Image (tube, rainbow over all chains, first blue to last red; front, side, top):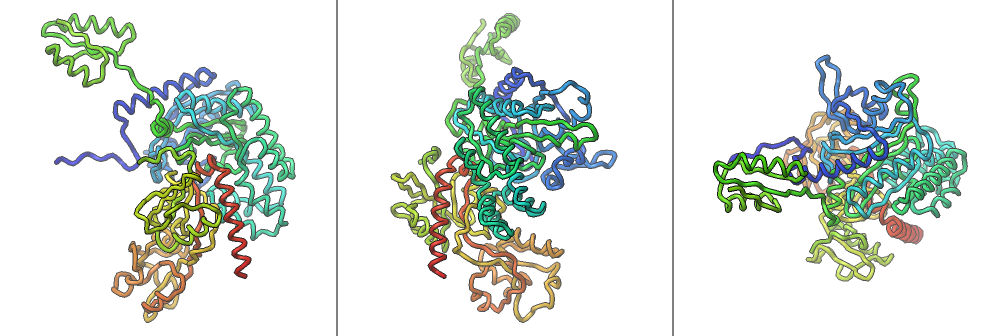
Length: 393
Length: 224
């Protein structure tokens, strides 16, 4: 047997049916984003390594696919779209009237262990709202993310809202050193609550302060939880963070999507550029988040003087949506195949004009590649999944 | 039988072997148990319909995989296995049992004066990742030989100059004329949760964690 040609680790092919499903979901999302006033942008797949690591620090480097350019500069494949779009806004789109609403549907690359619904190359659809610092902007992107999951066909999912300033504020109010709070945040980011407890126990703090810090990753629930969190918020930063979440939630009620939303103050997203509201979306049966995003007010100023600009956004994993639809037994999008046109020898010209006419009506039509009998044409039509046969003799 | 719709159920993965009965006993103390829950069971999934609980009994090293992918919501696993696999799960609680430590040992008769004298030698281990982190931190390049059991055999048959393994009492080391020369990390059993389960089934998981925490504190108090 001839060996099958392999593809690199962490990549995949989308076969016709899979590619169709992907395209249908992407088209629905593209329409939705456009309907909310977001303009699509396309950025290069490769960027300078320096650009991608600028906002995120050095931890990121091991996950990037790197290569050398002709000038011997190090290039990298984009690992997400927020940084390239921030680069774009801080350079080519400088001076454009704000706010800017930008959308993308792109592949991104991470050189890491492939996960469920996430190969090393995977597809994301998302938006960035640049130049708006208000809770209204945050509420808009969360509401749009929820609408996105709904138009994709998902029914059962939960969006958890957090606020990184709440965590920072609580750490601030106990005068933790930067080193100590970084260590605690790292333990939270790694989801290692045992390590968090041990680190907190080593700090010289009151019993009450220790309890508050240990409770941070466990602040999950509805509005009643926010009230509980308020008791832990002893300074302006942490209180402001809670006020901000309350305001966003009220706006989400106005959008009619608040039923999908829960609070979780323990969310610290993987990328260090987040500065305010953060969120992740989860669905039963999929062990990984479907979507995530948040506010990142300083990323743009990392790209140069005078480019400071508040911003917020989200990304939705296309393959994860497809996987969740399958796992939950929901209807996956289907491409209609309408008419298969077969013809007897010598009848190709009339077949072509018939086909052209049907296609202009908007039907999906396949023309037989060669003349044949009606029985042959019927067999091919069935094999390709066409609902109707037209045979010209 | 497919267990796809596990929304109402809480699925707990337990490792076969020495951690099994300790975990099952602890969970039983807070009412989390099921009829016929033993690691001798031929059934791979044991269900408690009344309490909406499912137990999966699996090989130790597979527990973090079940939990990371969300096939199980919760699991009990040694910190050594967690650190070795580097999987993205919530580590909720130190269960205190299964205490051991990861260390480096060498044949007593051939002990070299310093740790760094072992640079560029072969080390047999079940934990190549932990071992590599440890040696890299000491600036040592090593040749890692992955074994799946009876690690002590490595130096005896000339497969390696040293081993990195877990030790509870040190008896096995002694019996094989090995001597511990470097401590690497402590390990105890941990309660772990899937990232998404921890969010979507937060109340149930949090309640269980707190109940277990109380039982552990009581036991600790009684032991002192």
